[in-house]
Each structure stands twice: as structure tokens, then as C-alpha cells.
Image (tube, rainbow, N blue to C red; front, side, top):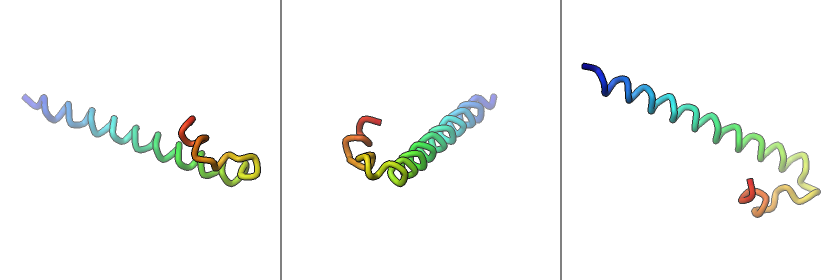
Length: 50
């Protein structure tokens, strides 16, 4: 009877994992920019490659 509820919770879980993945990516990119700025890590091409 509650098939929609089950599907909704799966989508919410997937969305939550996607948000965590994006947040970790941004945090790691910012840390990389701070640590390796002198080596050209902050160039837009590096972001696109990632």
C-alpha cells in the first residue's frame, strides 16, 4: 500500500549521498587550491579534469 513512501525514502537517501559527495569534492578542491596554489592547482582546467 505504501509503495510511494518506500520510493521516496530511497530517493531522499540517494539525494543525501549526492549532497555529501558534492560537499566532499568542494572541500577537497578548496584544500588542494590552498596547499598547491603555487603549482597551478587552482586553474579552471584542473577543476574540469576532476
